[in-house]
Length: 374
Image (cartoon, rainbow, N blue to C red):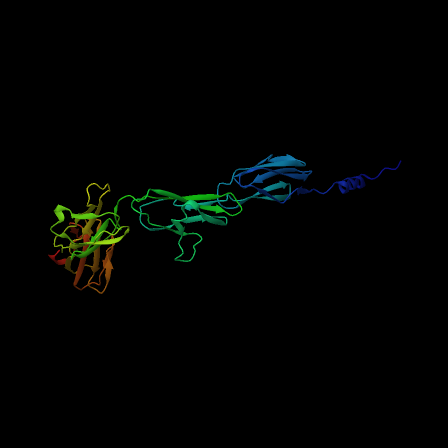
C-alpha cells in the first residue's frame, strides 16, 4: 500500500473544508400597527450573534451556533407615523440584516371635540390632524342648522362650519360632525351644543382706554331687553351716551363716554348689562373699562459715560427713551446706553402705563432732573 506524503494529506484536508456562509430567509418584514410576532430563519454553520436596534422590537434567541429560527415580538405602534428598525446577524466576518417596518396608527384627530354655543349665529373652525385621507359627514338630524362654510375655499386641515341662530323660545339642541377615514376605521366626532338661553354677551369683557378718554363703543349680542349701569365709583368719568335698542340675536352697540384722566395711576370702572325685566333669568354681563394715566415725562441732564434704563414698580407700562445723542430705544430691562465722553446730554424718558414710581439706578454724572411732568 502506498502512503501519501503528510504535506499532501494536509493540503487535501484544507481543500475539502467548505467556505463559511450566512443567509437569512427574508430581507424585510412588516408588522401591523397593533403589534404581534414575526419570524425568520438563519442558515449558517458558524456561531452567530444577533442585535436589534429598535426598543419596540425584541428578538430571541440573541446568539447560537448553526441554523436557527428567530422570533420577533413587536409592541403596538401608538404613534401616528411609520417606524422601522434593523435586526443584524453576525457570524465571524459575515453579516446580514433584516429591516422590520411597522405601519402607523391610523388617526383622524380633531380639536376642539365640542362647542358650547349660545343662540347666535356662529362660524366654528375645527383643527384636524390626520395621517390618512378622511371625509366629513354632518349628522342628517342637524343638517338644517349646521352646514359647511361656503364663503371661503375649502380647507382640508381647518374646515369651518356655519351654525345657524335659533329662536329665543327654542329648546337646546345638539348635533355632531363626523370625520371618518376613507377605507378605514379611524374617526373622530365634534359635538355642537347650542342653547337659546336669554343672554347679553359682550364681544370683549375688558376695554383699554387712553388717558385722553373719548367715546367707547361696546359691541353686544343680546336676545333680551337689557339695561346698562355704570359702577357708582366710576360715574364721575364714565357715562352711558347711547344704548342701542334690543334686536333679537343681532349685534348692537352701547356707547360710553370716557372722561380724560389726570391722575397718576391706572383706574378702572365697570358697566353692567342686565335684563330689563327682573323676571327674566339671565346672568349679567360685566364689562371692565381700564384707563391708563397720562404719559409721564422725565428729563435728565447729565454728562455720564453710560446710563442704564430706569426701573418701574409696575408691570403694565411702555417707555420710550430718547438718549439725546440721536439714539432712541424702547425700554428693555437692564439696557445700558454709552455716550461719547466730554459732552453734556439731555435724556428724555417718556412712560405710559400702570406704575407708581420710577427709579434711576445711578445718579453718577447727573446734573439736573426735570420732574415737572412726571
